Amino acid sequence: MSKNPVSKSKPVKRNEPMHNALKFFLAGCVAEIYLLVIRRFYVNGTANELLACDAALPYLMAAGAAVAVIGLVLGIVWRQQTKRRWIGWSVFAAGVFLGGSAWMIRTFYDSALTFLCVVVPVVMLLGILWNLYDRECSWSLTILGASLIALWVCRRVLDSIFLGTYVRIAAVVYIVVLIVAAFLTNKADKNGGKLRNLQVLTAGADPMPIYAACGLSVVALAIALFSSTVAYYAMWALAIVVFALAVYYTVKQL
Image (cartoon, rainbow, N blue to C red; front, side):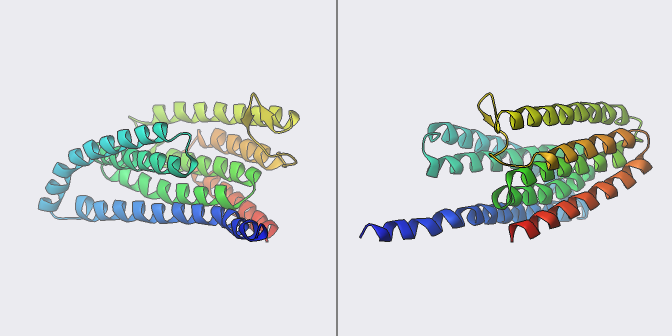
């Protein structure tokens, strides 16, 4: 009798990463459809549709803020309950996305929609990677994905008279963050995967992909600051690295 519960519990644990990855996939699809619907009526719609959407966006901002507060409260109340905690934080994330995206769209219009339509699939893919792949692969692809978004922003806004300076400052700050991340990874690796009780890498993990991701991102962002054209080619070079790394770890997982 004692063997049956054990044999039934193993498949659940084994399938849990796949279930979490599926949740990220479904959430990303819903978010992308939501953005495409707004684009259809707010950007490509008629004048009446545009005015109706513009009037509805403040209500979406308020609703998102309310949902985020409810999710935050639930996440704190259920912080000791693993099965319920993710529900609270999922509600919080949904509220932040709903309210934050409505504010960005109403403030920056089509540029915000284009940015969000790029960010949502990237976040969805990274969520899937964090559940299915090794930790060093997840970290390195997350860094490279964030760097690709930063390069895309540089390419679009670097030559802007009003926003170009702010983009350069943000890029410099991001470069500093990458250098600090590589330093912390090095310290964590030397301390057996832990740094001040913060789990960075699992025991025996290879930190080299993270070093390479940070180094390539720093170089790409540094040269992209000179020109939006350079940012374009740096973005494609980094995309090739992302593809190669994803293929390598996919083959390794098989």
